[in-house]
Image 1: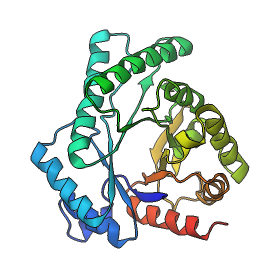
Image 2: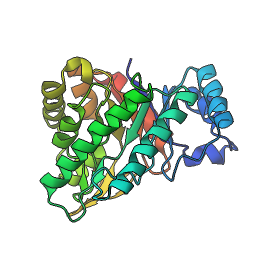
Image 3: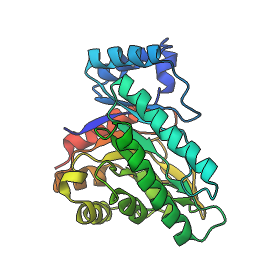
Image 4: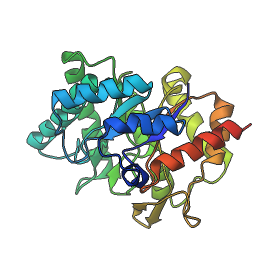
Length: 282
């Protein structure tokens, strides 16, 4: 089944007096939402006891949880020592995710740096093959590892690059951040056909079964010539993308992804709005 939920806690979560992420399970459930993404953005700093506490809370509410690995992962770093840290960040995130009852780990693939684009992409791909081996060695292959499409031109993570990375092994599932795609392509996602073109490209490359429950990030994002500038809320009327044409495209393709809203402070409210739009779509 398609799922909708927030990335982290909205401003309203704290305004209503909640303080602990365990309470987010009930908070999102009461809004008719189905999932929640926990971010280890600044590092994996959680005790096993806390992870198990989150698992109990989210399982009690029937809310699925996913994990975002630290933001500073970079598999195109020319230093093998720094690349080793990136392997560690993904594996640490996955081990903690397993304790939390999560089945998905999202991660940023790489930054181009001073290398030529093709060189950086090739290095990232070789490093992801090594990551694959580590995942199997650690018995984590039942989880989905989701390299994310990125919003800045200088980052590795176009739709085509993510498709190439996911072609390495079935443990890799695309995380398509439609706000990022729209931002790096200067507002490319406007119509249902725009979304269908992107989705059908990935289906052709990876197969309908691999794409059936792929991972989604969605928010409106301000952008410049260099791509992503900052996340916005659904109230913004200047920048896209809009969710309604994506909802129609998902219905047409039969895809049922795990959709995480990353709006700036209104992520639960906007996730609930996406669910309403999807339910109304033909």
